Image 1 (tube, rainbow, N blue to C red):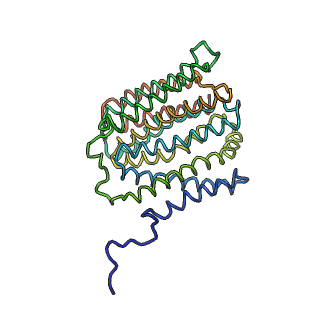
Image 2: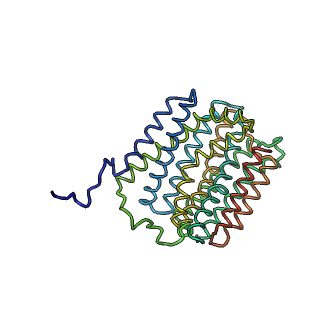
Image 3: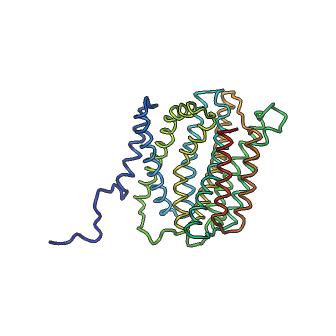
Length: 369
């Protein structure tokens, strides 16, 4: 019997992609049509499809990262997730109007806490446990944190101290100014990361051709993975939206604050980036993990604020952006600690534990204010 050629691969692989990673995003998008689940059984099915779509998104994002090289791969995932997340926020604002005036603020602070404390903490802890110490290029991380601190204070803290509008609101002129500044800072970050100072976001110059030892990713496969990634992200965001009433009901039944719902939804939306960052840290590529976390936080603010500002001004809605004193303190602590823990170019489990403690504090004080 003639043996099969060594290059032959069992199973059907459309465009070279694993079959399950193609089917899962399609099923997740189809399931969006089912609407909000009417019972526990349907909620479980949608939850399973949501999990499959998240894992498929990670799979396709890694293929794109292999093809594009760093830091383009992480940028694609961060921007794709954020664009769809912003679309979801805008659609809810258009549907709920004044009832959603604090939605952008709640989403922004949840995204910052999840990325900078949750994702970074888990990655540093997991990577440090396996590799003891991990190194990264400090210049890119420092630049990203400086931009994040500026955007966070301008959008979430300063509204509490302006006088043109009462309370935690900006006046229309101030909102336009902050929206333009947010977009400008994020555009500067993208240019620095991909063109002007690309080497600042790579730990080793060889990372520009990262994964070269692995199977070559063709242009056709990369295009297919990019399309499947977008489909998977659409499924993740809108399945999370459809599951939100079930989550709200469970939270209310447990007697927990409604703010916890926003954290859960934000966590589901950011899950693809979280899993991708974790896998990179476990593979001793903590630079990729930090690029994903900081880039996601910057993209969330830099793209959300201009978008919701336009919607708010067009519809005449008041946009509540100022944080409560408790949230402002935790935000300040997060930025201070991130500046200190990511200032040496090397990470250990110590930094990971510190960030996770802050994240746990954020969750605990949300549940027990």
